Picture 1 (cartoon, rainbow, N blue to C red):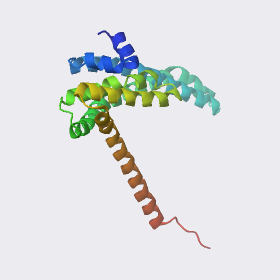
Picture 2 (picture 1 turned 90 degrees about the vertical axis):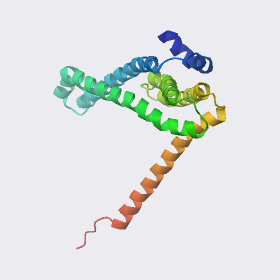
Picture 3 (picture 1 turned 45 degrees about the horizontal axis):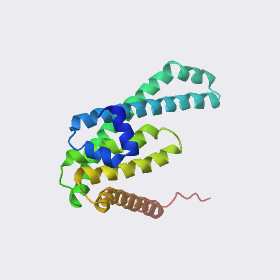
Picture 4 (picture 1 turned 90 degrees about the horizontal axis):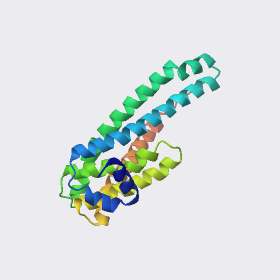
Length: 198
């Protein structure tokens, strides 16, 4: 299956496409992921660099805006691109390893490679459309659903178990964030704001 066939299949027929990707190597999945991650990173980097240039002009720094539009803008875009690619590749493996813990808990026994593949291929909607404001919300939900299908097909689980494997870490992360926020508020409240008396 070539690159465009994978993209089309993962967007429109994820269940059938993941079935055909069961025996594919991790190397092939990484190649595919690297291409769409690079496209996403390039587009987002250019948007951020352009936004920086526009911000400089709007704030009255016309010379800054001009520079950002030339050399500095290109430099910023390159830096953003490299950063996004590092985060994308590292995130795919680290996130895949964490997700596999929960996949294993719900009964997935096909190996961590299949979990990482599900994550990489499942991210297709987000990486193709996630750079577009507002559309990125729909793309994120679409990717979540695609990843669930990937876990289900590659690990031969029920839909319910695949949903649990994806949702449990998300729920735990939300709970942890709420607890940390509550602790921060409690510390700030107990410390109290500085008082100024006369």
